[in-house]
Image 1 (spheres, helix red, strand yellow):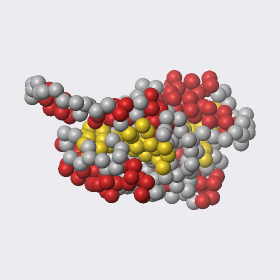
Image 2 (image 1 turned 180 degrees about the vertical axis):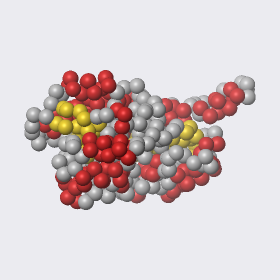
Image 3 (image 1 turned 120 degrees about the horizontal axis):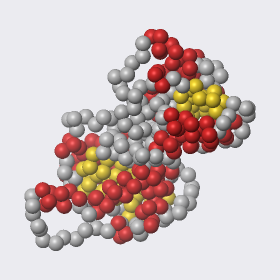
Amino acid sequence: MTGESLRVAVATPLPEELCELIHQREPRIHLIRDASLLPTPRWLADFKGDPSFTRRPQQQRAFEEILNSADVLYGIPDMNPALLASTVRANPQLRWVQAMSAGAGADVKAAALTHDELERVIFTTSAGVHAGPLAEFAVFGLFAGAKNLPRLQEDQRAHRWPGRWPMNQISEQTVLVMGLGSIGREVARKLAALGATVIGTSRRNITIPGVSAVIDPSNEQQMLETIARADAVVVTLPGTEATNKLLSAKLLTAAKPGLVVVSVGRGTVIDEEALIAGLGSGHIGFAALDVFASEPLSPDSPLWDMDNVIVSPHTAANSPHEERLIAELFTDNARRFLDGEPLRNVVNTREFY
């Protein structure tokens, strides 16, 4: 599409200074918004906002009028797939939705749009914005496992000065990175700089700097052989039907004893029950988990009370700059959209990632 202006409905909380940044970077964007119709953020980059927020019927109509008058949505309305679906159907001029999360393909899938609707409307994610923070969390988790952070904490709490004991070194380890998208590539880059041997997974025949070998995750034998010699696994994959429980009970059972597991993609990629069993038996040595099969993590989950687990409440991607980086990504995509160029981070509407 080419044109002189783009009507963009702001469907998620957006600070005033970022509205100004968007206008400055791309004057052809016309933002349509009413902050009173959006929830108050509870923290930085809280795109869903206060869950107690409600709109009166008149306000809801006004909000939907804004959504239905736009060419583009900035954010999935209320982070609600049903409202996204109704907006797509009520607004025939809608052509593009910029989601705030990297894993928004799951929300698009949940909207259950028709083939024609998916052909008409482009969906893009914030993939890449979170790669740096998530890769840092992954490296932190690997260091915590290699240096046996739980043992250090236990000794400190007990005021105990034990005999000296050896710590593992990342530079001497083999790390399996499941997924070589923007997050996985950044993890691989950081690990290669530390001297680790990195093996990645991809369904495509690709070469990635810092990755010594790439294996097909659908090749079970290769996966079994690799995990049997890996010291750690970092999961960066999105949650799709193809990735559901890809890190399976069979793989976890075949893993090298003491395996460190770090998860920063989507929790459904790991067979969580098998992971809990492995952590409980000690076969899995340590896990640093930012995502879980079901969120919020149930208060009854054994993971909370395991000494060899770090539970992070899906917050590792957040950084003080997240909102600005997404706004800049959107602005670049808007320029591309207006100039008829391909957009970045388009959702695959067959596999929804």
